[in-house]
Image (cartoon, rainbow, N blue to C red; front, top):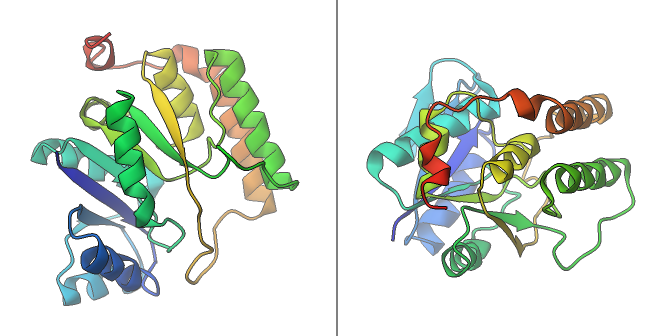
Length: 238
């Protein structure tokens, strides 16, 4: 069994060293790679200076492009599993073992590190949007995903290949919905997440509202028109 932690990083110079050093020192059983998404700060320089494993993208591709680059790397290296892991210090690597147990024991394709398996969502505008996405996925797939916006997701080797060989995937709730429709099995594990080590999220109120609207439109309408280049990747095991 081999696992790769994929750490997309855009202008995370103030947090990336602490995040990766914690992985190296406390979780050496996991491999990792930082995907520098065309950062304009010193993210790349600092990673190279201390000898981190890093992929430098020449331009900013956004989270979808950076994560897909990491999954292509995982696919080429033959990893059994890959986990999406934030560079800002919010994700906690101690939960990876439980996610691995879940994905292996339950024969899942994707396991999400969820904040709401055992806990209720707080009453806020952001959580209202998350509830709407949960309902949308339930209505369109018949499956309930309690934390569709969680960025801590683990993928098995079939999903690694699926993302690596297809060009129209992003690590977003609408993609999770689409993959469920294609036969992927999705599980969740309760996790806790920390606040950002430093900096601030690019999602302000306006951007968050637009993001939720875009996801809902995609889940309800666009998914039916998505194309896959290699249809046997998921369905061959069914």
